Image (tube, rainbow, N blue to C red; front, side):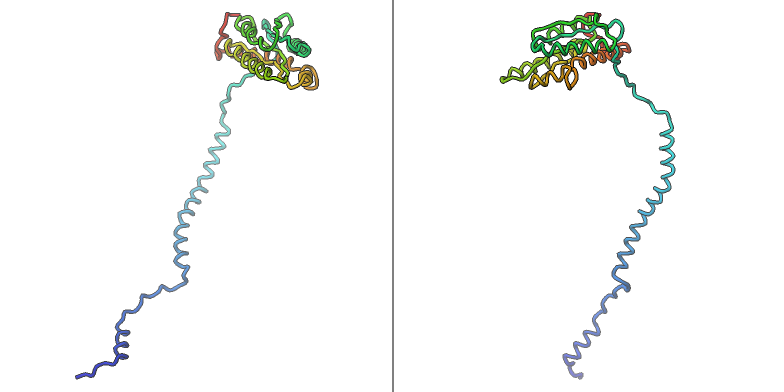
Length: 240
């Protein structure tokens, strides 16, 4: 009978019988990562090569497009020279007439300088800016005027009357134009002081009455051009 094994002999036997640990791949730890990065970089390199090959074709297409005739937009402007047979209306507020008279003189000068004889200009005086729109709309809807200019001056005071008059005059003049299809030009000064108003009636800021007259000529010519080509509706009033 064999003698029992000692504990040390049994432990040695178990160690010899145990399976060997899996072999660790040789090489540096970053080798696997480098191989993966190389594999990922391959498609990127292919894309770059394809883009480089396509670049000459793209440049050629752009060059051909630049050399081809380009369609141009139709752009028109109204002339600032009065046309034969045109008539203009001017409505002037008498309130603050120290300034409105100067504005009217500026309008006269602009009409004359831009080829509109003064006998083709009809001037109507009204009490103030609040009354400008009703007369301007009536003149515009008469069919006898190519444009109407509204001239007035509102100077801020100590009450809210200024805001009410400015709002009514502004919206009223705009509505006179859109309700008639005839340009009605806003030549009303809305100032904090009388000094500001005088500066804009021939003073250091120019004459806004003259500017309004030039605007009327330009708009009258633009609307006439559009209507002659059938690109704008006729004025919605009696025929001129």
